[in-house]
Length: 279
Image 1: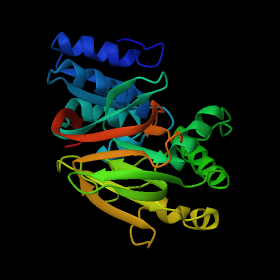
Image 2 (image 1 turned 45 degrees about the vertical axis):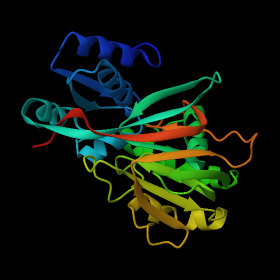
Image 3 (image 1 turned 135 degrees about the horizontal axis):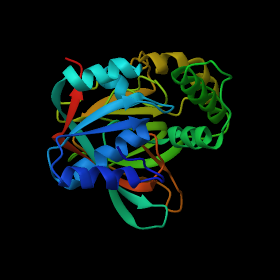
Image 4 (image 1 turned 30 degrees about the vertical axis):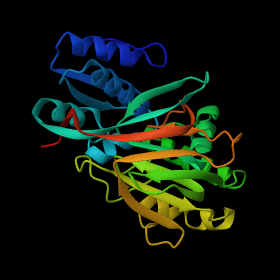
């Protein structure tokens, strides 16, 4: 058993464990911890398997895997579950120190309003009074932050290229590159996403305006937003995105973390990670 004490340390711990050829490394935490552990395994180049004991605020990746929140049930999956090969993503971007860098992701990477929502959630330390369950507290935090952000954050102008297509100039409230179905504390942003189909679900939400974002928030949370005129859904294996205005800083959200900004390149890695899942 090892405890991480700072951001990124779980990646180092998992990488060292994988290089020692351990068969299973279990991440106990939220989406950030799971993502860090997955990064360590993928960086190692070994076929160590990822297990999950859910904790933390978000829990979006475990939702896509249908891993329950109760520790006893999750532990039962670690003991008697099945091994599943899933895709992962790699994103190359500009870090907070201005250096081009890259990391892996297992859930969703996005830019636009979502990055501002995550920043607000992290800055807001208030919680629901006990005995509110952590999953409910997290969902309310994300939901209230989304509504507050909708009142303040304008749409962003970007240039996007999907696979070998021509570049497109877009104005978006949010743009998601989804390997999994959920992000933002239970928002079913890519309801049809599959973890092993060798491609990303790309969800582009146009400039809805504050009122329409607020009134359609339930549709986005429960996954019925793809039929909206302002929402576009397609598939791609590689996405390149940059700000349309040269000096604009458009920040990234990757598995619930804020590692940097555009320009960014997203690439799918088919069958890259072994994960312990329900039978």
